[in-house]
Structures are given as structure tokens and as C-alpha cells.
Length: 50
Image (cartoon, rainbow, N blue to C red):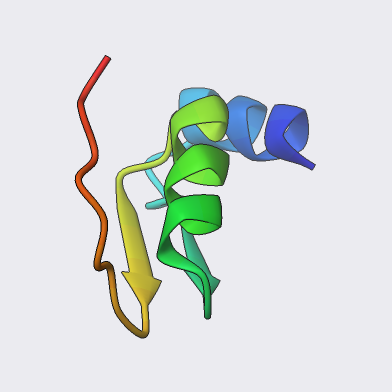
């Protein structure tokens, strides 16, 4: 699914992101897909950018 989302993000101007209850999993999916946003209930962890 991340590969499909990445190709959509590369070939269109549609914003690709993730809507998840778990923010860390949403962040991982968006990073792999090349997305631009996440919407999650809460993020209570320290996250370091690549």
C-alpha cells in the first residue's frame, strides 16, 4: 500500500497522508509513502527525523 501511495504522490498533486489511531504507525506509513501529513489521536513519544 505504501508503494501505491508513493506512486500516487509522485505522479499527482494529491496530498497523501495517513489517518490512524496510532501516530507512530501513521508516521511510518507516511514516511515510506512519501506523504505529507498524518492525522492521529495523540503522539506521546519522541520522534527523530531521518
